[in-house]
Image 1: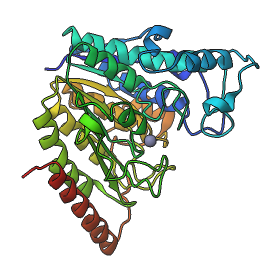
Image 2: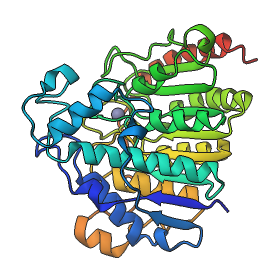
Image 3: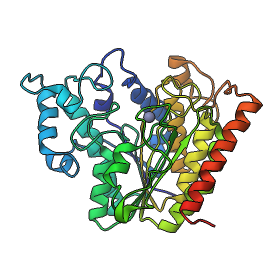
Image 4: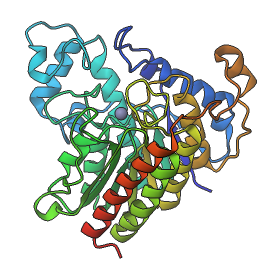
Length: 369
Ligand SMILES: [Zn+2]
């Protein structure tokens, strides 16, 4: 049985990006409440931990000193720093009080998880408030200020551990891929909605790493409308053979659930059942596992998907019905979806053919027989 540490600090959901921002703090609070109501924190192999925020030295494992200074200054309302120089402003990356502390906490959780895994204190560490894969060394992007994933992977490879990174968020994991584009020490794999139709626009099939890192970056762009069946088929055809050949010491995953068919920001067509099946597959591939959250903007879906993910990690079988206490507050009946994505047979076939062609191209490129 895996020993699981789950990072959950109320400070993660007591800070707001503002009323109209899609990254609502409610997503994390409700996830925590559903995990708690489901009894998962009481499982004998699960431990809930509150991490400390990362120090500026720790943030500097990836970020520039100038950027960290600017984020700290903007977070306390200083006006001598120009926000747009670091890609802050109205829209995706607003400045708000407590911004530095909130994102430093996500990095602190990922680092604490990485170090517990390295010391053998747990087998799986899950920080569902993390997974901020778009943040760059010197600027914010796509709701992400500090990149908890890059900081944690950088720390892990300094301990001479081999890391494979799998990103199943609907958006391309650009910040992580580009941080490790020119090294063979980290294998990065990102499945995402095609960048020609979705932020951040990158992650084309031709992007596969540079220099000694050539072949150590894998991108599968998926057409809008890709459903559970096609997604899982592509996953099975690519991820187990690639990860198996790389033989990582630690698997790091970004578990964004904005692939859901009801997500307001994107157009893939997965269900909660499909997302759970993906987590099950990742669990079977992970020697030691640092699992991070990510996107997901339907607040009815995120708590269900990530609570099921924690149950898979801890090997706990939950009843399909949502716990009474949670239902009374938020409604809903079961962990699984009440409706299904509506995709016609023609559309399904068209998507399947595109995905098959791309998967076979990637298999050929990676010389998988
Ligand atoms: Zn996303």
